[in-house]
Length: 299
Ligand SMILES: Nc1nc2c(ncn2[C@@H]2O[C@H](COP(=O)(O)OP(=O)(O)OP(=O)(O)O)[C@@H](O)[C@H]2O)c(=O)[nH]1
Ligand SMILES: [Mg+2]
Image (tube, rainbow, N blue to C red; front, side):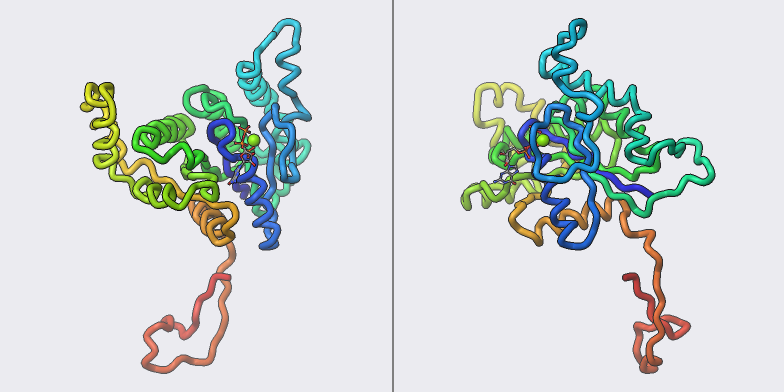
């Protein structure tokens, strides 16, 4: 089985830093977490990429091409579409050259629990409404990846009601478009002042009505479109659609908890063998033993 996180979010929200942090955390924990760079415009990152889209196509290729003449934004979208059109390249790199997973060819060895983070570009429309992000997720799933969308939003942009709503709507669009289990992260918590950190608490278990009160009283626009804002608030609340998990990359416990949460979402580790051990027969009145006198342990 393969496990993957598609790490998405607006430009500069901390995606590459998140990948580097998780890889380092895994390393300390003797756990191999690979990172694939899918940002054709990336210049530097602090992780060891297992695979790099720039070996297939670079942003400059799309921008300098005589016929294409893309600007940086269209160029980026072109590169991801190009990657999907050349999915053989990606599959060979991810699953081994000549691998034929789609047909479940006999003799192809499945790697044990491959765990891969995909560091995506900050071109948010790739995930909110274009087909490219959605298609990439389906491709990976067809190669036996169990995936989770990880959507990062910079916590500094989420400190008032209006910004929170707009970040929430972006997260909702990604959820709807990607059709994957989804985790939202408030990144860069270490940069928030103490005061702002306190303010942030109300967004972690959001009460859309309270937030909307704040939004709708703020401006003439807010008052005029009060009903619309209220309906959006109800949508968020009724479906419990959006939750954010804060991340301070300097707090190891925070990093470990977040990774565990995502592991649970993609059911990583649940297929591990259940090991049985014999213990001395427990006391007669010990209520915790199993019928056959054995304890079960999953380690
Ligand atoms: N203090 C602090 N800085 C951060 C954190 N995450 C990212 N940064 C900084 O924010 C800037 C952008 O971070 P990246 O990780 O490159 O963000 P990105 O989302 O990969 O950016 P793009 O790929 O350009 O969209 C860099 O200067 C990082 O050092 C964080 O958790 N704490
Ligand atoms: Mg990046």
